[in-house]
Amino acid sequence: MSASGAYAELEQTRNVVSETLRLYPPTLAVTRQATEPVTLAGYDLPAGAQFLLPQWPVHRDERYWDEPTTFDPSRWQEPESRPGYAYFPFSAGPRNCVGMHFARTELTLILATILDRVELDVSMDGPLTFTPSLQLRPETDIEATVKRR
Image (cartoon, rainbow, N blue to C red; front, side, top):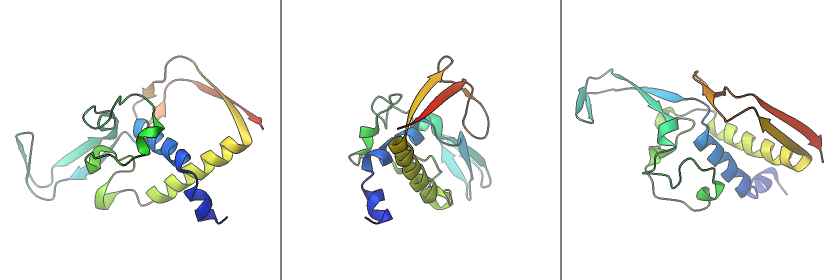
């Protein structure tokens, strides 16, 4: 089987990656600059205004996601009708991450390879919390024991 054929067989793994990126995007937000005057929520903003677009609250918005804080890879099995920008872990539009497709493919293949070869025993010291920074970083101590299958 070709590499692309093997990748096509990993639908469930791709769903897990998509759901993980929904709940835990690589960055906390992306920035944009208005190229022309715009009105948002009744506020008139000039061309050149800077915007911070945080993925975390959008990816957990009940308007777009059923049970938004629940990890549910099955939500990706069927295409749903939601706005295109309700999911943007690597940004979106013409200025999205140039490495987005590579990163998603790499995440999927690495996850499939790891799960096929090892058992992971993961433990955390308390609930999962994060430290504010440019990238999403866990504040909670996480330990993993890896055993070969």
